[in-house]
Length: 248
Image (cartoon, rainbow, N blue to C red; front, side, top):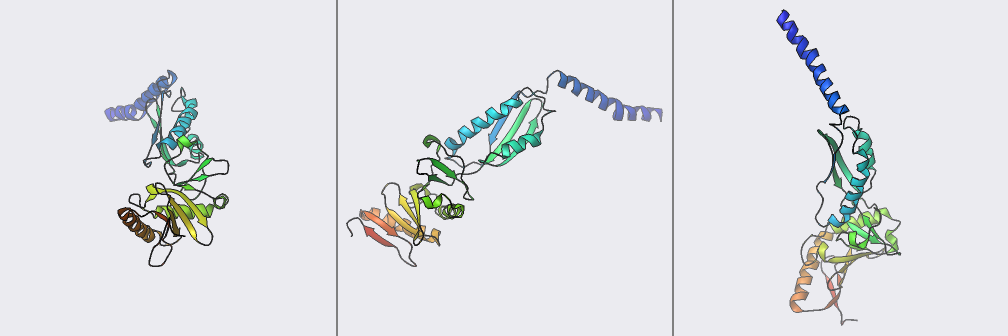
């Protein structure tokens, strides 16, 4: 019984106190002071790097104030609130990586479109139609541009534009990569401009995936026949109308 009592005392009192004392000693000596701040991007789409790099640099600089502080004393909830307030951040995970690293894993919002203002500023637009902070041209991701003041005050219309572009395939003769600009007309819906040819594509607002497939077939046909089209009207029930540049 005495042996058991000694074992219990050692296991539940002496050992924990020794461990706590060692940790306290190491903490006082600066062993757990933050020496590294690790910011990692998670699940970001290719082509968004030039947009995200300045944000990551700014975040790393802002978190630099935690260097030299003990990992024990840092409140992760406070850092989480601070980082979550950044409008480009979708979600995040923060943890202590012992003995001296603060790890912040960030999932950014994907920029779906850009809005160009009257002043020529490029403003990123995310999934729900919200604006992010304006960016320099060199930082802008490779996505289509919304043109027209109608998009400025209408978040729901920007979201609708995102929904439309999301229904268009990423690859192909008519795809996200081939579209440079998107405009909106209250009567005719969405119009898109193709990058290389300048062809104006009338897309409307519904059955976008079906219409995009039809437009892709038409573009392939025009290329094979070397026709120079000016307008492709896909906003019809069962057909696509093409106006060549020589047409009135």
